[in-house]
Image (tube, rainbow, N blue to C red; front, side, top):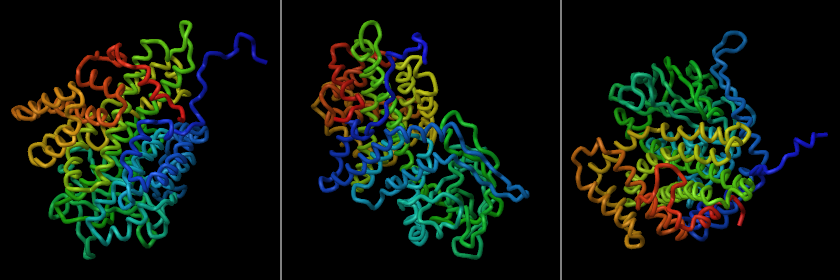
Length: 545
């Protein structure tokens, strides 16, 4: 029997047993907005099923287990044979299997596939973010493989399969496979053109032997990898299978696993190639151009993954404040806490609306939408991923000491938050990519400005921000040094234009007043007190409506 002094009271119940999809009004509205009516019922049914799984106690346990039991490297078997295997906890495989079964690697040829997949990725990543890495890379590899129709015919049905099979076997013997990517090397990092891995051509058509290393190779137990290496004709893209068709292991020496800040459930490795067989994808010397579509797709997943972390952080903070009493009242009713929660909710909704708009542009596939993506993806990747860490940190603080302990799940979100800002090119890389598009691709800028212009006249603060942005864009003198400032403004104007068009008035008003009208402090919780903050917080509350 517990002592009377240990009676538990004034604690929020766990946020479990709810539908992560249906409880997210910004996301459900985006799906309804961007999908054709004839696809809605089927898509909604699948997302509701996924949302209920993501919000279940079972899934929360899998996420905790996968992070508490990180992958282990086994370089040799008991006899001294090199095997280079990574062992994952069973919970990791359950999470990954559920993601694949839900179609999170299958978007490119499905009607409304990118919107459906992005919504599912945003929902399921809230359960556990680490396993999203191989899911993202497998999805993103498809356009690169299509550079070689023969390779695509062999591999694409396996990449887009809804069947997950763990274990290393020839790809042709499996019902579904996962694909990873290895580009960065010790000496170059993001500067992939400085790669030193060499590719020696063989007599067979498109076959090469690779010798070199990769400094970061995520999910090394994937069935294959897209890698860059220096062929006689220059930097070239290759498909490297882990197991060759005859069943022998390809030479793929895993030297060690990275000891990372977060993303603990996922293995990231340093690998060595020594006469490793690979198949050329695309022409020699065009490796970056071949793999760039994969990079763009994974960058969008960085945006979506950050939006997922933000949404889960807001959901936890608002849920806690709904039940926690302090100073003779519920936290959610306290004006200052309401201001903090509303500010966090704005950041989360703006990220979600932007991510889903980008997914819809992929589905559209028109020239103007593709041009829009060229500039909007790195802009969104720069800003949304960079906002994730301070936003999650503030949400953790809303739970006080309860949020600082591991059992709350908030520390895991905070450790995960910086990753998407680094993966697939950190902030400076994204800013420089936007500047490159501004200089070289006028259609990209025109498409971006056309998108923003659809909201002109709806809010005077947005109109003024658009005018200021046009002034900045007209002056390219010293633009690199102010690249971050420019891209930040582009992202905020784009988010503001989307919210003005699609969000409730109280959300759009608060966003424009703070982010564009600059009636805002340097920390979260500094929104103008005259706004309808209660409605903003209520909209973000994780309840099924």
